[in-house]
Image (tube, rainbow, N blue to C red; front, side):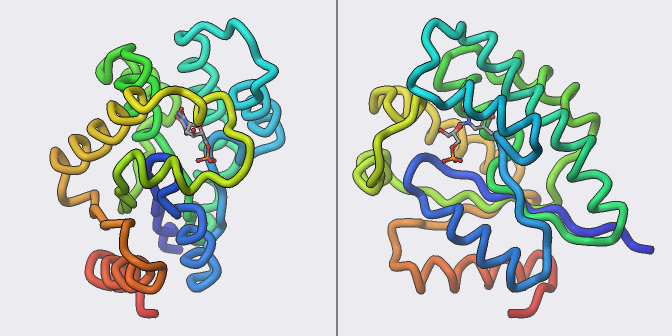
Length: 203
Ligand code: TMP
């Protein structure tokens, strides 16, 4: 049986990627999952990582917990699902660690990339859709109490955005950048056009 296709959505805060990930997974009967937090173990790691009650977590420990969540997620859920022939749509993956911990936290994209490479054991998305919005637009869309990472300053989120754009331009065969300042209908149309062009997925 053919393996399923692995699609990841990436983007900064308030990019609308979770809405698109849900819609695409529904339309193509794919498993919808997310990082951090896509497994039961990952849900505990997510709580620790994002809760504003977490104080004093070192940035290296933060990077290791993101990688631990990812390793569990790949081994327990993503790889077995792809092997069963089902597609997987993941809301964030390895590129988020390069952007947030590598660039945002300034740990270095190479160091964090090596950590994540160990975590995923070679499994990379077939297609990564980057929903790109200027930082001020994205942050202004957050309508609940900001979590531990959302509440970091605009400078942090600018480094995150630049990292995503840099990663996308370095690997254009795997990435598509979508202007997420457009209306919901326009973003939806751009996402569907990319899935059709890159993967042959009809809408
Ligand atoms: P989200 O589910 O709303 O996208 O929140 C996840 C948060 O975790 C978001 O602020 C990005 C952050 N994050 C990292 O810092 N590194 C990572 O590797 C991942 C997957 C997420």
